[in-house]
Image (cartoon, rainbow, N blue to C red; front, top):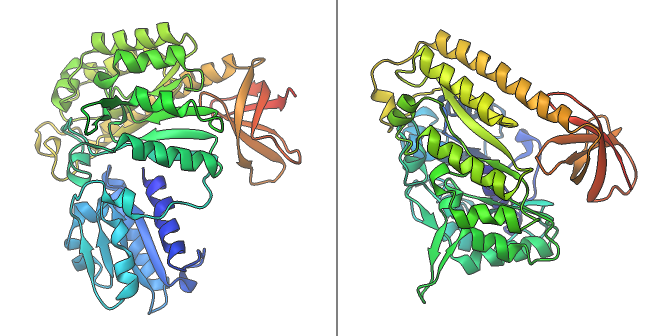
Length: 420
C-alpha cells in the first residue's frame, strides 16, 4: 500500500512541475511516506527526519505522510519543529496546498475516506507489476494492530473506478495486477442498483483484459476467504497459484487473545479447499512471536502449524506494543530475550521449509515475469508464479514473460535458463 501511495504522490508532484532527485541537498520538497505497523518502523522515521533536517537546504520543505503521521498527530511538530507538513494516509492528496503556500504548517490526519484516489492524477506509465487498492481500513480490530486507528474502518472502493484504474494500468504498461487492501478479500461494494461486487468479480473482469497476464491480491484474512473467491483459483488461470493468508499464531489461546476469530480447524479447512481448487497453490503467512502471555507450549504450536501447512514464504516478527491497541495494556508481556530466541527458532524452521520448496522446483519450467537487471548487470531477475526470485544470464531485449527452466536453488532464490 505504501509503495502505491508513493507512486501516486510522485505522479502528483510531477503534475505540478517538479522532477525527482536522489540528492537531499538538491531537493525542494522531501516527503517521508511512513508505516507504523511496528515500533521499529516509527523509530526509524524520526531517525531519518533528524538526518534530513541536517542535510537539506534551508528553503526545502519536508514532512511526513502516512501512518506515522496519523499515529503521532500534532506531536510530530513538537518532536521536529522544522516540519512543514504532517499528513495522514488518507490526506496526502492535500500536498499541493503546501506547494502553493510554503510558509504555512500543513496538518491533516483525518480519516476522510476514499477521496484521495479520485483527487490524484494517474501515472503516465505504469510499472509491469501495478498495485490497485480496492479498499482501505479494517474492521477486525486485532488486539495487536494499529491499522484500524491509522487507516480507519473498512471502506470498499467503487467497482467501476477500480476497474477504470486497472484498465488504465494495463493500457500504460502493466502486465501483472496486484489488488491491495488491509483486508483485501473483505472487499464488498454495493452500487446504486443494489448489485454487490466482491473481489472475485474484480478478478473475473481483470482477467478479460488482454494485456494482463497475472493477477494476485494481498493481504487476505482467513475468514474472508469465501467459496466464490476460492473458486477463482479453480477457474481463472491468470490468478497466480500463490496466496498470503496470515495465521499469526498456531496457538488457539494466543489467537483468542489476539481477537482472531478462527480456530486451527477452520484455517486448515480453508487451506484444504484452496488446494482442492488449485492443487499447485502455495501459501505464505505472517507470524507474531512473543505475544503477551505466549507460553513455550503456545510457541511450539506455532512451529507445528508452520510444519503442517509448509508455508513457502513467510514474514515473522517479534510482538511490538503499539499505541491505541489492547495488547499493549495486557499483562504477561514476554521478555525481549525470549522473543528473540523464539523468532530465531521460527525463522530457522521457515527458512528450511522455503529451501525445500525452492529445491523442489529444480528441473521444472516456470513461466516468469521480468523484474529487472541485478546490481552486477550480468544477470536478469524474474519472478516465478510463486513470487520467488529467479536469476538468469543477461541477454539483450529480454522478454517480459519467459519460460525458464530452474537449474539450481537455495533458500533465497532460484537460478535458471531460458527455454525459448
